[in-house]
Image (cartoon, rainbow, N blue to C red; front, side):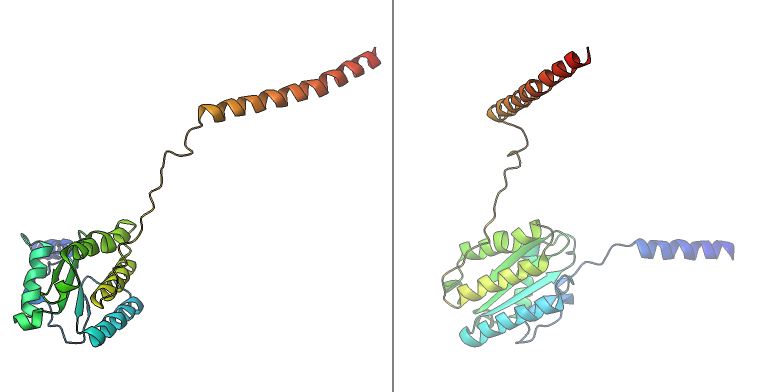
Length: 221
């Protein structure tokens, strides 16, 4: 009995230590015509998901262009996020006519790598350069700033909504580079000024204290 209990314990330990299962394309749920966000990676808040759904639903009603945003947690071995996105695009929209006005963006939350697939009709507004910028900048910048998934996907939805509505591209987020070297070391001019200040204070102190000390010394004699 002891050996059996030990074996069961080891099996349970191994089961608990097993890594999270990868997401395969054929495990993805079918998408409905009014479903814009599929958060399999479970990184988006309900409030933010609702805001994004509102934006993308409005875009679809006004223009006929549809955007689907997908998160997954871990890819199958040998799979890339781009190959996953391409296969999912074909699975969800098998006919060319169904694909034409569709845009699909997929993010793997383990690596934060993302890919985008754009239908032929949507490409008339969403060029390859803008699509690449959406992935590499609009999505990636908030993620590099501390896995800010909600901000990243809201920014993506906002930018894609503008572009696919025929409006000017608002562009990627502005990144302010901070020069970490500034203010770390004093410049020679700052050092000289600091030294001069010390000398002035010292001379003022001497000019005040020495005469007083001398006066009291003579008074005590």
